[in-house]
View 1 (cartoon, rainbow, N blue to C red):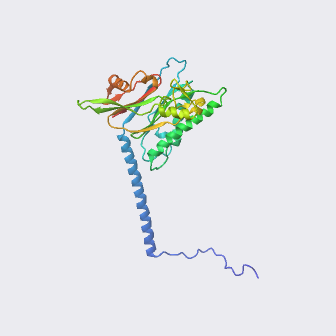
View 2: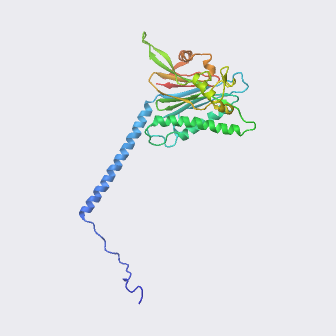
Length: 330
């Protein structure tokens, strides 16, 4: 007996077509309609979010940055700076609640220019890679972590490169960085460079507004109690206000020979909400503030460099020896 005798003969005729009941067609039409409605709603929400984001971005104060650098008494210029008024495009998959991202930084090198130059070239790139991605809930916490991780990574990368040289590099650098997220400033700093905000406030006995300076950074030197205690616990000493009698700062990028003595690269972080009457932020190395107080520097800028162009108040920040600043346009 043939194994295939019990199989039906092949046929080219299509099988019977199953017809759907009217109620099934109605259900499918309703499902398709619901899908179109949901898709339309999602599109409307996305469009609305984009519109809100554009509106928020339009309401933000504009940022402009200026820098001037001049070599001092040393043979080489050891300061470096970065101005990125718009680094939004540098971050992939930027959180939906973030409309603007800007970055300004000044680095005061010592023992050479290699640490300051390395930090200027790499810190913001590391920051862009580590910046929060996609929809996030606690943006502020993640931005702070991003800054801490970026400083640590930059320091580790430079020390690795420095130790591989023959002879090993002994350069170090301060770092004062301002990350602008929409209308919030996040300031991270190491060492004795400083960031100062100029804010105009109503004077009690006058209708005019007076300039008030707000410190956005914290100085790190071995004479500060907490800094000195950390250095001594690590086995280092403080003489003449310097680590081992040599290094004038207690936190820095680089300075590999002092890392075992308690010199760290963990920055202080501060957050500042921008207000309507905030005029400019001045980032400067310690050389400026050894000549000017913060109030004097801010007042000098207000008195000398304020000019009106096309109805806008432009606050131009003067800088030298690697000083940097940016202003806000109302």
